[in-house]
Image 1 (cartoon, rainbow, N blue to C red):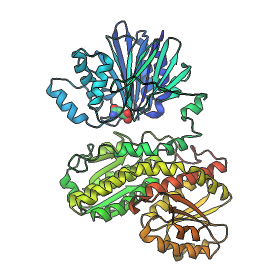
Image 2 (spheres, rainbow, N blue to C red):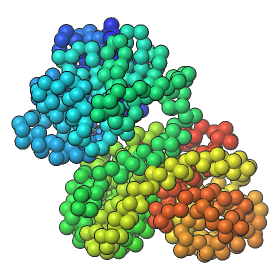
Image 3 (cartoon, helix red, strand yellow):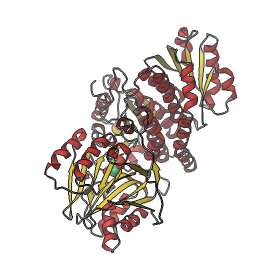
Image 4 (spheres, rainbow, N blue to C red):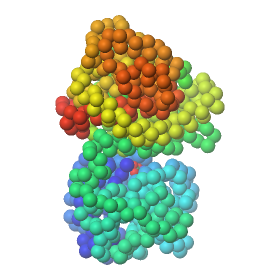
Length: 612
Ligand code: GLU
């Protein structure tokens, strides 16, 4: 999820680009770079220094020439480590073209092979660089910049917001979009583009949205827009009356609601390009062999917090689909209890940041004891990604809010896709069943979008329960980790007491705490276990609890015994945590807002926990 910016026609483009990059840093900061049109040549500067990338780029640019147009990029790496060689803008072999990209080119490997065979030299490990070299070929055939980009993008699968400058076409930027966002801004004699409005808010009077498969040519006088087939189109205008802070949150009240809303896109990106044409599940970042995966006799997942809950969901999926025994361990406990590890064990560490110290150390211990170690993380080249034998990336984009939302659902889909790969390798599911489950996973982003669209109903329940001080979340089967996650989300941002339990466990102790005033949230979306949980509901209701159920649309039996129901679309049981967790995020969010709390900065908590 990189940030991109461009300007043509400014007396001094560089400060505009650098200020824009500072505002785009929230989209990633693995590296930053600019390319300027100055004196009929392209001047390029790049810097890769983590959170300091943009600041170092600003230092590097002190010796820059003055240019009237240029492009800038702040990177959140998906393919290739976050070093300077992989920083955008990328160039063609003759450094005549500079190109920036946000997104993923799915067929980059085959395009790269073809380009290498035709003699191109690659300077980076990114998926992006193929675009610069393919453009170079179309330019050499005499096509103009716009037609060259159109021809290039027609060959590409995946997601992109891409912008290109060419030393031979001063004061022109050509840009195009599929999936990744792109906005055009206009002002008197200057034209802009960016991933989002805040980056160019101060400079433009009007803003226009570039839609999927559209291409724009920017000149100081304005822009022209076409489809990727070359047919003229008119861009829709975006009416912007935001101040800067509102704009940075994309019009949302806070980062939590913005990131919750981004979940369908995060899931789509995470699921992109995971299935080869022969039906095999592939992870292009995976570095362990199929043989190592096939011979795993035990899988252990280590994680903390919300990632621990996604690991628990994975246990249900891996055991059911791949028939391998799975242990799930709290990372901070694992390494101090002298775990029994054999060399056929697969140990998977799960962490959004890839820096969680407890998980990192647990993985190091497993590796020392001889296991094959896999990291599941959202951050390319993070400590865990580097230390593991293999890594699987979620592609949720940067998460700013302290509480995890889009990273949670993205972890679940990656782990469930891995579960299906294990099933494929071990022959525990038929090819027909694997492809049925894969297409069910592919429709999860739509289900999550549907849940998000029902927010008002959840908000009104949250308002009615605003005074509640005690919650018990109950689930059975895979609803149990969902109950833990729902309770954790509520604790983190509302400071209300909440506990998650397996439904059957309540009568072994905690039932003593049930009395009028306590709210029991029951996760009833596993149809096979629903009846058992309905009995647990009867037990708490007869002791005076108020019952809020999460249930599939149309479940009249649930409505009959519940005081409140959050309705969600029906899914496969093992996919239900993906929709239920989203509904419970919304519930916690609205309880917190009702209490006037800052959801983005919960007290006592930090986004990345790097102390034991
Ligand atoms: N795939 C490109 C890279 O890794 C762009 C990343 C993104 O936009 O997330 O450099």
